Image (cartoon, rainbow, N blue to C red; front, side, top):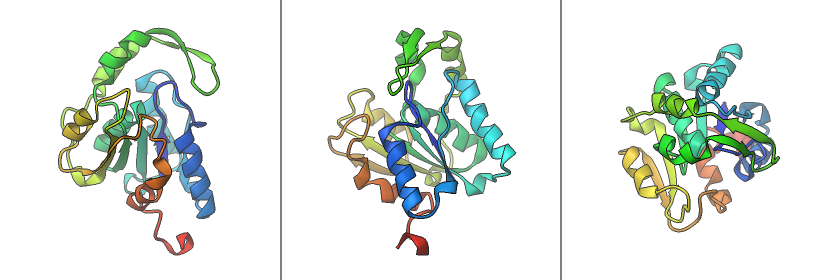
Length: 197
């Protein structure tokens, strides 16, 4: 089972989510891909994932999280709590400081729907901060040196000894994600199976 956690102001309509959903459909594995719309609250976002796993009786060894940007921050906390695998796509490492300027009403990139990002969410983020990862073999980091939003060097330093792919250039949204998608799915335990040939 793959659970995708999108970034701040993003949604299940994002480019990478649509690509992964299409690829999983091609492989006949659509039922094993889930991307919820995350609430603005960090605490509610991680709880939504935990509730989904509990409701569907999915064990942590059956799930891989894929987190992009702020979703990567959430995926890191969840992977530590659940001892499951996680793929981090240009993950936010310390988002509380970066997102403080968004306190107030902002909009979703894809729908333009307004939502409130409350000051209390900054404190919620700080509570989810993972200072040092354990079991680095459970993590796969993809970091782009051309990320215009976050510093790829912070990402690399935050996931020592994890599997890492540093992409020269690219951008925060990983516009060249198709080139790495099957590598991600292989790490998730999807590609390479008989129905993926």
